[in-house]
Length: 131
Picture 1 (cartoon, one colour):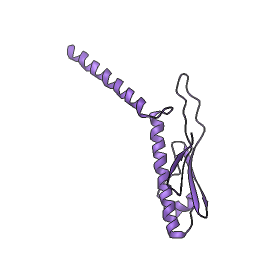
Picture 2 (cartoon, rainbow, N blue to C red):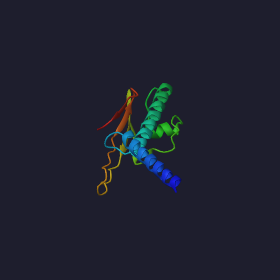
Picture 3 (spheres, rainbow, N blue to C red):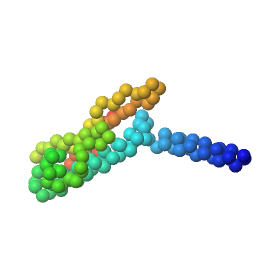
Picture 4 (cartoon, rainbow, N blue to C red):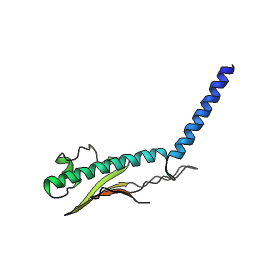
């Protein structure tokens, strides 16, 4: 009987520690799943920017997202991730790849509101997030 109580106490402490560290791991105003999604979107945008640089080196101009995928410069199989959709705007000497998220659903009763920033990257390879 004493060993069962000990196991339960250890399990409760472990679950409490996991909950505490997961809450602290995500930036203020975001959930852990949002932080994971944001990181994935940033990696996708980095891949798009690398493909743009490669395409520019070979062709002397930047390309649309469709041109990048059809020329095999970009091997992403989809142009969205967890509600974010990707767009690329080009000009003769610049590009901007942007990830937009559809409007966030209203928070559940007593729940935390969700915030999905707009994330973008340009030819300088710097990731930018809107507040």
